[in-house]
Image (cartoon, rainbow, N blue to C red; front, side, top):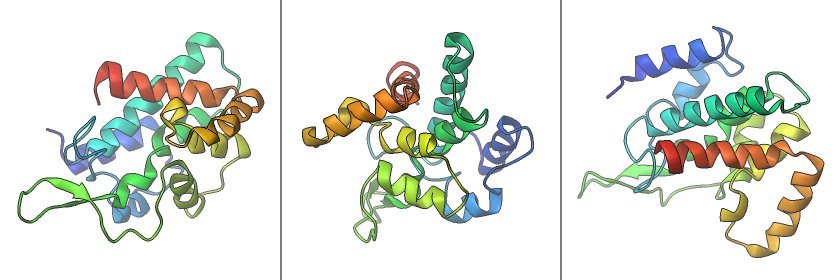
Length: 176
């Protein structure tokens, strides 16, 4: 199992020592120690970072292999790394079981929207990056009324679809 310090080094390596969001800001949110879920991919301490890094790597890989065009060269790195930023405070350890459970004291619910809100507090992001992060859940969007908006987002920003694909590769194929 990797340590928090090892994850921080991986973060710095991935962004070539230039962090778009400072390590200190992410560390204060728990980005390097939070789980990615309670029972699915990354359901362990540090799983959120491990999952996010893998999604970012897969999105960069898809960009290179498929010749995807982004509004900014940094976008696949930013979108992949911060698409699940909302999960920094989504889970807490249950004192009785020692396992992660949903945080009952959340102030802002949601997934894609919450990640966008949190990231906008840390850096400026483009409309394309916002759309990719907001709609990265793809067909796993639970409210089917939202699928129309998801479809329009893909039509305007095709990389929305590839963000979802990178997330599925990381979580469903690689398993992190």
